[in-house]
Image: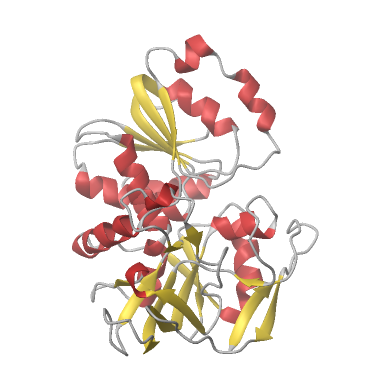
Length: 336
């Protein structure tokens, strides 16, 4: 089968084409696993973290990709949840202990990091960690929902905001452009304020219903009950804490942060940024329950990602585009 394979870790600036096209054996489903013929796989910022070594895959070489939409090609001897031909999705969580807090479990294993993922024509997954896709979402629309959308949904829930409370989005990439649509559906009376370094991305946010959009250091029209930070850098943490109302919460939706501007944290002031019960909370992975709760909601809204597509063989170009920081919406690879 065709697959884009990562052999070594290095900065994209030094190795601009980190993935190679390879012909790998087609995997076989074990016991409770299903074999997917991959149709589309989303491209996520986490893959940049893996390639550059901030999040190290547990084995090399490895096939990246964890926003997978495909059809069941075959089932293992104990797999009975899906039939051949069913359309399903796979997210970041490949398997874990099955608890409601399985995202925090030491048994957590990640798709495309601990096991081969969806930058390939076929992949396997335990049946309990695959989910049916709503009929009103195309493969390209559904792929970004498996991580960017689902982790955004988890982040939104972790803010604990109520309808009518102001929400901030720090950075406006793949996840945030889905969060704003979800927030406007769940909290129609809440103003949403967007902070991004790119003027074109800020205009994109306004087109999706943001009440205001400014730069990372700009002051919003009102103090915010919560902010979700999806950026890979540290400055937005300090800037977010300035913008929170008393009792406000910053939720950091990032699996890793780069070291380039880490010194910005030294500017945190307890009195100005943390006092008055302001708090910081991180998002760690997600659970299969997040995905299974979110997808029906996405179909109900319906959630429509803005998608740029690349052939599987152009995965390196897709990653470079994502790394440029001026992406509007989501990137996906067309595998079939």
